[in-house]
Image (cartoon, rainbow, N blue to C red; front, top):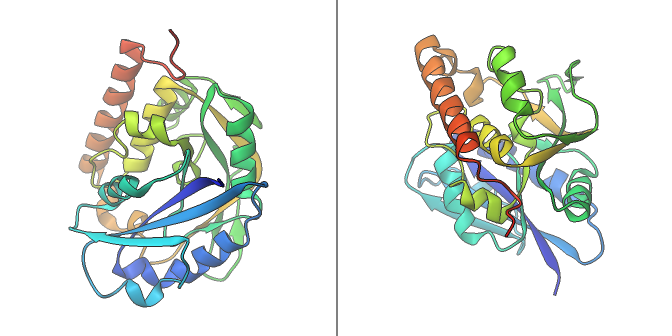
Length: 252
């Protein structure tokens, strides 16, 4: 039987027209022998806006549910996650060549690694790309390193949560994504960092689209009061997980 890596995408009407580009990048991935992907697309809502943009592909599963934000949509999608690993792909982003194979190589090689991340390029409206000049070194990220950097750099992590590939059982043990109006993926990243070693690949793994309709570009996302509240609960959760010393992988 072929093994599966699960791709989880939350989508809503305004971002649905980007799905064909995400699909194209997924189809271009070359997986190791014996592997296949299964793309779970979960609409945050129940509209007629997404279905016209869905690919006709048996490897794609589309579901809908009541509105609750992207974290809720992704967590609901986990009900159909029939593989060992879960890769995040936002509806408006694109995987870089070789991204899935690199994630699998790390996670299959080292069972002490619970999650992987990779380098990101911002994809601008004119098609140009912009990189980040403070990427960490290629290799393992020890527990707690992301929280330390995040606190010291105004709540900015040194790795991007939109590139996460996570062991499914670990993701489920942490409850999926945080129940926040935004930064739910950062909350997951910090929780993972609290309980497990991670890994960063310096090769580009994601093209992160910048466009006027993206959620992170809206005024509500940068509201200072809400942002401080989100960051406070994200940090509190990470510190609590570290305090109680649950670790992946477990022993005994």
